[in-house]
Image 1: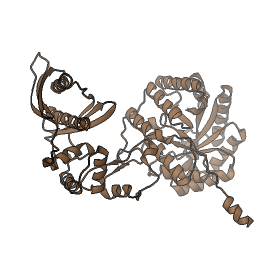
Image 2 (image 1 turned 45 degrees about the vertical axis):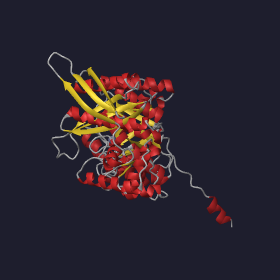
Image 3 (image 1 turned 120 degrees about the horizontal axis):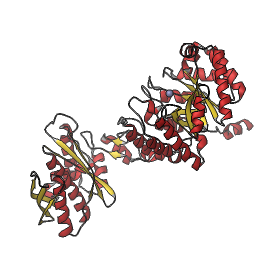
Length: 523
Ligand SMILES: [Zn+2]
């Protein structure tokens, strides 16, 4: 009896994993990435205040004046918010110079870079282990004199454990004894480990130093950074190092969003990360770094919550047959249903439902057929195109366009501003307008704006973004695609137009938008 109760009453306490983000230090070592001081400040604020990451490593000491400015700004901000102990700077064993640099920026924590393999110690530093240890001890004294806390990196630790474990233990024995180091950080500097090795080496460390706080720092050269991070936690690591979008030298570091999802869903570990902020954070780092996230990158990739195959959308509406724990809402995102040649009826029905369009089963079948045909021709079909496909297919059902372009003239002449004369039909009545603008399309929109205001006394959506591209698929060189984002009463509406002429494509996109809002208006 007692035994059963003990077993039933036994609750495994989920481990807490501390997360250290190094986007602003290791992430900045991505080829071609360099952040400006104010960009670093904005990201640091997001990481600390919104995402609530436990610690951030923001720079390498003594690199440049720009870094000094960035670190000083971040420290001033963190100081004001009471978060200064969570801001860390990489420093070197350099006779106190890094420590002084960090102190002069207002920093309170150094992540000191020591050599974790005999090879690095001998061939890079040209020192004996004893000499290196005494240099580190001196550095600890400088830090304490400057009121700086110390975490220690054992650079190249993975190779150290493989080739020279005695060296690693010699270093650890002397340093643990000082009790002056808060965390020992074990990097797989060259990204050469696999999860089984992580478990083996970590257990050796844990057995010898059971009370030490170890961080694991993964690199992704074999695409194992996330798996190795999980292996480290399973073997006793109390902290993990990550970067946003997996930025970092070569193949980068472990991506924060993936590590978070795996820790939570697969290992039931606790972290302080606010998941609903992860997508925003990813977009921000994407734009500051200029490095795009792959569309199929888990959690933050553009396509990862888009269902294409109809059978999945069908499953979604039938008791969530394709459910997993990676729900888009968790990460501040939304599930989307793309239309293509694999779209089933359920997928199209979902999109129609979102647009508020009700069709009979026969009509849905015909729309589905049309989408499949377009998909075969490699045309891009999205939810915004759906009303056009619907009205195209159901022409005789009176679903004709409510807003039609009857005629227009746009003109450009040297020394004069471009102008446009436009005739449109709105709900069966025709209107004329003309305007000049900064370009042909600008003049065209101004003429429309004039008509909507003067004759209909209605507002016209604001142009929020305008992109001209060659359509994906590539073979239709003669065509340009214009994607326009409109701000319509605070919500964003995106339409596209395809034509050989850029202005014409923009006009098509504009009329798509006008018909969408006209249908809304006359509901
Ligand atoms: Zn690294």
